[in-house]
Image 1 (cartoon, helix red, strand yellow):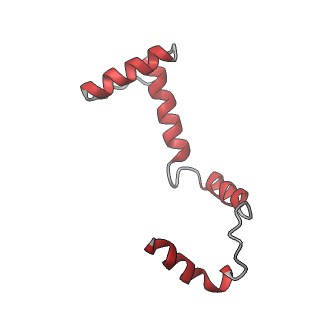
Image 2 (image 1 turned 30 degrees about the horizontal axis):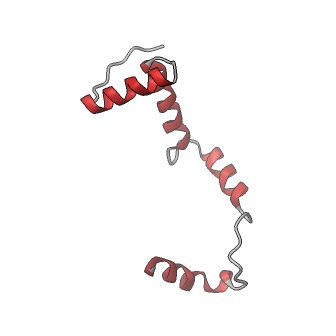
Image 3 (image 1 turned 135 degrees about the horizontal axis):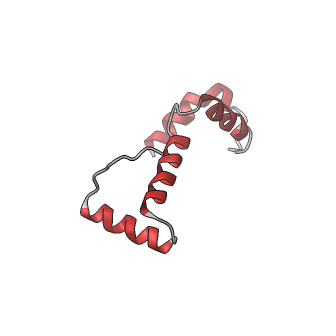
Length: 82
């Protein structure tokens, strides 16, 4: 492991310590887990994983509309006006 130093606000430090105590883990482990999660979910972090997720979601949602492929721009404009 590589030792590093970070600066937190007093509020962040208190909250992280409390969370680490509640989860019965160290602050360092909690921060490592947080960094891992950030790297997993960051845009562009892993193109293969992003592609897999996009393919997995295809077809999972249904709008009830049968003309989305031809009127998608209209539906999108309507959605943003709400």
